[in-house]
Amino acid sequence: MTALSEHAVPRNPGWLHRAEAWLDDKGKGAWIAAMVLGFIFFWPIGLALLAYMIWSKRMFSKSCSRRHSWHSHMSAMKPSGNSAFDAYKADTLARLEREQQDFEAFLHRLREAKDKAEFDQFMNERAQENTADDKDETA
Image (cartoon, rainbow, N blue to C red; front, side):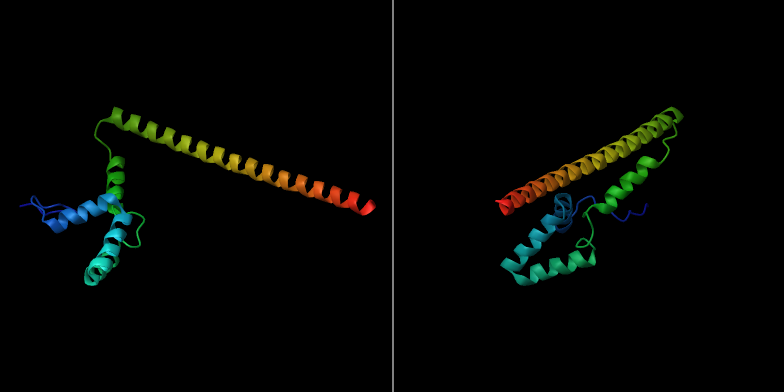
């Protein structure tokens, strides 16, 4: 007999497990909407959903399925046993990391250029206002 993992779904899950899985797939917004609807229709249901969301840490996590995504990332890092595939995977991951760093550097330069253009525009407008004020004073 094998032990079930923490997130294993029974063969015939009940409606409660199916509802929980459906809400997890939809994200935190679906949980919040269900809680609000629970408060609107019958306040103890909304209160129970709020308590469950806090108890299960769904309320404060970035994503309801965070544990599943972390597990899938970790399984992607495990060696497959095929050295050619593992080398290809390592090269691809390294290339993707370089591309991400290059893209982030590009975005940084783009933001700096936008900031400089906005600052230059501000300084030009200010200089024009000062020139107009000086002309008004001399007239």
